[in-house]
View (cartoon, one colour):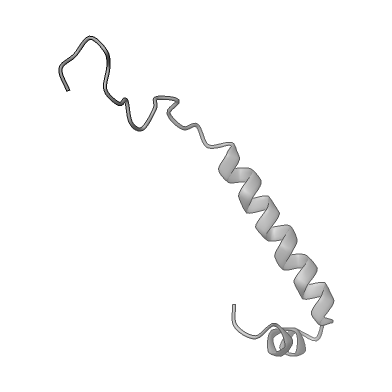
Length: 53
């Protein structure tokens, strides 16, 4: 995003307001990422006892 002070000044809002909006947007993005359906399969299966590794 760049410098928060410059951006807030250009938009005519307080820096603290812009910081609150940024953190709210970040939290929303994180919550949306949690809703994405992902595989439950383990990434690494390792060495199984019945096979020759």
